[in-house]
Image (cartoon, rainbow, N blue to C red; front, side):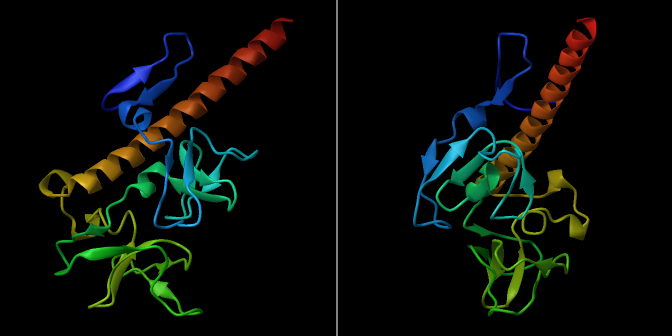
Length: 193
């Protein structure tokens, strides 16, 4: 199901575009990639039609901000995550870092889920306490404390980022469904011939 305001194609192609995605800037200068601007693509600029986000490490098949020079890709939602977040279980704000706060060769472990964080991924971190988390699931979703989503307060930036990530997931699902319908229609046409 599509949530929020969206645009729909008037032809019979089942294409939808969230208003949030429609309003995204076509190019941004991002602190994580200061040497070049990153450009918005509606789908990955690669033959295999997917990419691994250089911020969170998750795969994507929809909208991406990309640097074609460096083959650097960032989910739309990751590109706009807040510089700081608050967690109820930690007394200081966590600051966004564009690489883990460890010396080379040391393993960095998320203090929420206790899983390893790859050295090239972004993280939220409190230097004073040496406390850090993954950028998405652990930093913003406090499910580990068993709280319900409607009882949590979050900043508007965090809410926007969650909305963008949800929109991106919905867009990828719709694209896959559209490809499957097209393939089925082509198979029917081929079998009729």
